[in-house]
Image (tube, rainbow, N blue to C red; front, side, top):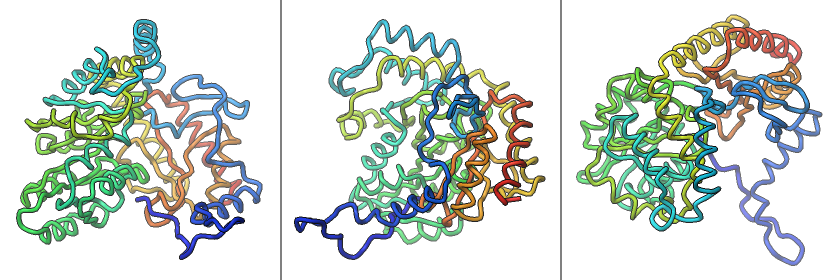
Length: 416
């Protein structure tokens, strides 16, 4: 869950008598200054000089294994995907310069939406410029003033922002707590519009939701259901459709939100649905209507990638093997992990505090391994995490290398 940084009661006044609108960020500025003053390299400003493959890059002049990119299925360097993007760039140019409802719909946009419909076996698909915009647009449009949104308190920032933009009443419940969710549904006024928002995989800890049970409760109380499958699409489920498919409840989901920036390997967002009135969203959803559409090369790469993910069972199996192997090895080494068992391609390694987490991050980088350093307020319960995102392109040998890097860095940083 994302929360606002603590703000002073009154903004600081700068020279000339004007209030300093940046004063509310002072605690964060101070935290970052203290971190950098300790001599740690800035973990939030890493530059990749060159990307060599889905799993390796040159960082600070050194070849580095990538374990923090969300490139779950390794599609970023797929030859067919790259060829499709190059052809579209040549045939259609570098951009659309317009909104989808004006001059911004090309044949590629319709093709990628058709690919999404086939991938999910659903009637409608709507593509946005980012996954963030997909949540912002769909949530704010379908749930407005007088409606109620019931959502997991650990929901992604884009979900919270979509709720705020739509002006619906927001009712959060404790993370993955079925009983707490039902209690809140019971309190919603009779006849009010209700939208339950869940995620298949929660991106910080890598844990999954009990969607089957939660969706059943939502339907019992007359609520529509939106599931964000950003971190499970392409990987989890027999066909890679996500946790809802894996738990056998996809047909009961009204809206599935996803992104192209994870398993698909490019950028963009989408919503798929079987709702018979869904197409009206193209005229009433402001983040869709008032945003330039994705470049032709991007939708071409996405379309090709999605169609290849329909036949990626071997990749999914290998990614699961990587996840189980790394989770077991890190747990055996003595690290504190976010889940007892591997539930997704995300493995969260919990750090004692931000300072030691940053030291561990830097020690790993010096070993030749890049992971994400996740800090409050973006993390649950104010934890500091090293978030690992495995890829189907990681070899078994690379996973063993990663284990050794964690063990050596853990000793150096005083974590083990």
